[in-house]
Every structure is written in structure tokens, then in C-alpha cells.
Length: 414
Image (cartoon, rainbow, N blue to C red; front, side, top):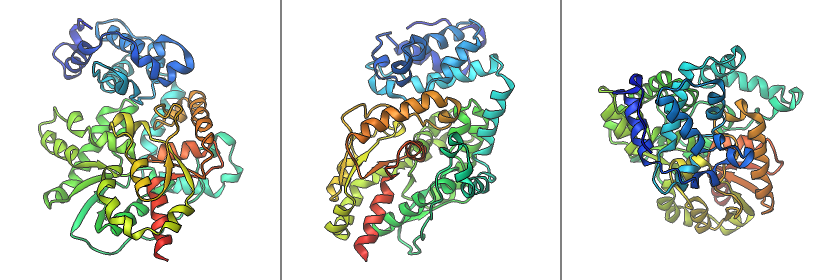
């Protein structure tokens, strides 16, 4: 696809990158078949191909409208289209560019601006944890829509105290410690059982995804630089990996090298951070042989039949497919992925469920209907957003797969 950039975008990093991406697009339309919003709405402009044309028009100088903004806002950034595209179009990078340009050119209503500001500034802040604790204390009294966003309180359990020669950095995350604290401690306990010590750099905060996907790229890059500064002493000491147990954070940190490539002070460090970053599931192949001898068959059988929902950030953003359920099965668990639309987004998508609740709920219920058909004792996933979003629509327990593995290890040790 050829494009003729408007003068304001010529010789700019965003213009050059967008032009390179657009050249790969051949207008085949394969992406529409796997786009969640296109499947729900049936509007070409609510699919990747239509959004690509909207972005192309803006880059060529056409004035974007509020309607342009809304079509781009409705994209989940699930990147399913990237898995489908035969030409390798990096749609995720293109839609980020398009959204930021449109954000500068189209004014939002004041209420919408306030909500988006509250999300991007409030969720990563120190005030989030006490606010969540307060919400949990009055959860029974909250309206249904707000109650769905406040998970029941969860105990974190103990953090292992043993030291190991093998060390990995663990990103605590911005909302996960307050909403699902057991995920981090369960991760540390499982790795400890395999002879790996988990270290958290306290100065590291939000990965930057929240602000970046709310079109505050400057604020997001500031967070990325702060994280690199916090992690770098450990990198210099030879830490083995930077481990992400939230796949949404993982896909963002793996792209630090790309997102900071034009920053002379951080480009090399960002690239190294991305190279070191691993989703927790990528450690499973080396964990399986170590943990097999520690798990008793009675503990794995007691877990029962479970369904695994692979987050979009895992299977499309990071292109990690089919590993979790296979490795957990090798450990003796009964874990399956639904044969129906396992590739589709559950509708969580970071702040999407707050900003687009109607579409998000439709996608959640569609996903849960397929998972319910498997009659699982529990639903497993790999991202805190997916876990809390799915749990809001079902009584079946939804948890991170590492929590299930941790529980079985503890049961086996008793």
C-alpha cells in the first residue's frame, strides 16, 4: 500500500515508521476474520483494514474527526490481526501511531478526558492500593458495574526466604499487588522450588502500557526509563532474566527496545532489557523436569479438569502459543484450551473494559460461554486483567496458572 505523507509527517520518526508498515499492507482482508470488534459490529471501520485506511488518510493530511477517534478507540489492540496477516503488517505499532496523532488533533469531551486521566495517573499511583482495599471492604454495597471491577480480597501468602545462585528479576506490576497479590508470591514460591530466587527492584513501577495505550507516550516512556534505571544494576550483576507473570506487561517490556530506539541515552539499555525479558511461561520447559519429582499425583489429580484461556498479549503480542497447557499437562494436570475461538480476546484489554464496557462485556460473555462448555473446575489464565475480567462474569474460580501450580506444590509438600 503506497502512501504520500503530509509535510508535517515527512522526516519524522512516526511518519517513517508508519510508511514502512503501510508498504506491507496488501488490503487482503484476512485480518477482519479474526478481529473481535469487526465480528461484533460488522463495520469495516471497526476492523484492522478499515482502521489502517483511517490512519493512512490522517497521515496523508486529511483532518480526523471524532468518528475517526472512536473507531480507533474501539480497537482492543489484541493484535490477533498480526497473527493472521500473511504480510507481517505490524498493526499494533501502526494503531499506536495513529491514535497518538488523532489524540493531538481531536478534542475529547471533558468527561472522557477526566476518566482517561484518572486511569492513566491513578492506576499506577501509590494511591491505588489503599483505594482498592477500601473498595474491597465495602464491595457488597457497590453497584454491580463497579463491583465487577473490585475483586474479593486475596491473601498473598509467604515470600520465600532462601537465597539461590540463580536469580531473576520480577516486575511486581502496578495493579496486580493490590488486586491479586498471590500471583507474585506464588511465582516466587514456584521458582524457589526450582532453585531460582525472585528479586523485585522496589524502584520499578508500571511497565508503561497503561499510559502508552491511553496515548500518553511521553509519560509512558518516562516510566520505561525509570524502570530501566531500577533494573540496570541487577543486569550489570548478571541477573538471569527479567520475568513477567502478567503477559500484558511482558509484551510491553519486550518492546522497550523498539519504543526507545530513538533515545540515545537509553536505546542500548532498552534493547538489552527486551532481550532479557521472558514471560513466566517461557521458563516452564526448564521447570518441568525439576518440579515433576516434587508433585504428588494426588495433588495434580485433585486440581481436576481446568480450562486455559491464553491472553491475547501472550498468543498474539508475544507470539507464545500452545506452551502453557502442554507443559502443565506434562506435570500431571488436566488442562485444555477450548476449540472454540480460543484466539479471540476476552474483552479486558487493559483499561478497555472501563472505556468500552458494552463491547467488553459482550466479548467476556462470549468467551465464558465457550469455556463453560468444557465444564472446568477452574479457569486458568496468564494476565491479571483477563483473570479479574473473566471472574466478574462467572462463579467458576479464575486464577493465574502459577497459583494452581503453587497450590499443588504446597499440597504435595504436606
